[in-house]
Length: 240
Image (cartoon, rainbow, N blue to C red; front, side, top):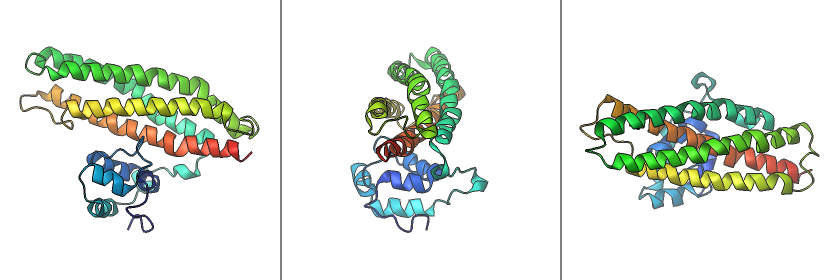
């Protein structure tokens, strides 16, 4: 078993922390929120979706354990600075490329299919809202919060003896994560779980697949910040 010590009463984020990429894939497939909603128990998250917790737990244990061969990262072993660099390199860079690409593809699909699929115009509003949320969010992290966390990592006294200086921007980032999560739920709903219509062309299908990949990456991105980076930074400040 991948999670011999985890039960239905463990939090969703515990499963993702134990088996990051692959547990995240299971939760994304089941539309279970593991980033902003990672603090709920597996049982509670399953019941909300009408799923049987025991069956989901069995599904998680059937998923192969991540390994070095899978390209899995042992993020628990990363320092705060290393985790910051990982998030910027893997997730921020991905969004810098994928958000404009998705927007451009969506415009093409609207041009070809907008007449028969008016939901595309609502989808455009949601995608624009996501960009307007995430792009300045990443800049604030890279220019304000992440340098503070790196400074904390270099000098434990830099954050002070309480969570005030670093706790406030973390609180704001968490709130913005929640907002991005709500937009992603809207996108999933508008695309009917990323299922292109029968008359959708290859570009239509590419768009929905790109949105699915975008959702998966942002979920991992937020999980790594909400459930790994931020708690560790706050814990480090509180302990010194």
